[in-house]
Length: 252
Image (cartoon, rainbow, N blue to C red; front, side, top):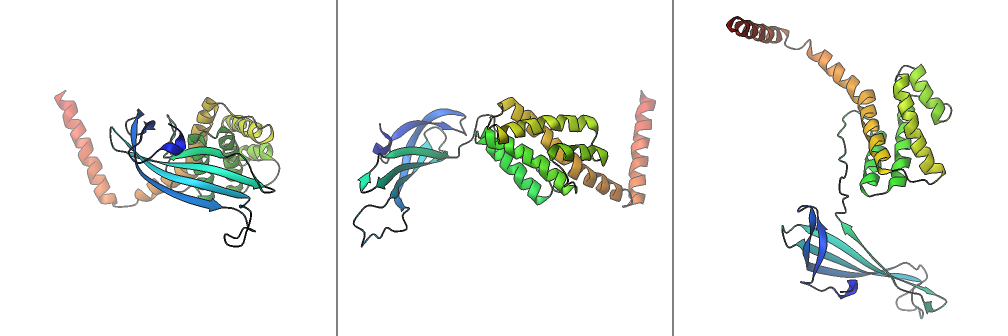
């Protein structure tokens, strides 16, 4: 069955992310619309067709197994040049559109907003299969970290060295960050898509780096603050715990 021939109650095979396999889906609803991109086109006065137009179908598919829905946007693109209509370009894209083995975003509370945005978009790029953009995003996270730590002078390599000289990170950690820089440089300058496992390792390292630099210190500060809260209750609890341990030791 061709894409444009689908009607209500039609069936097709699609991946269901709830059932985690390919299942039959039934078409429940279709909404049709038209989009025109031509500033000079007037639907009343113009003689020629617009230079560019899209015919869209928004299709709601339901899994025959579990009932979960997927939205398909089917598009026919038509271009007109000097009064002659070009070939129709057709394609579809789906929501949700998850990858198998997708990565979940790590939740941070004290990482600066700008860095969280870059990190989040980097994860989204990976999950969308956009490895080139993901590699560029990883490099951007490194640049953003240096900026937030007040390191602005030199290229990224110099900035990473400053993380050591200013005692933010150890040499061993920065040596690992050089590998992320290489992945990002290849994506930016050579348009070389990183391998999937390279991106996974780099993302895991970036997540730990963000925690180490921005979250760990805050956690340690909060624990320090807790040491001065309710000291008498704390001491009594510790005394009870020690007493219980001593009783267990005597029984044994």
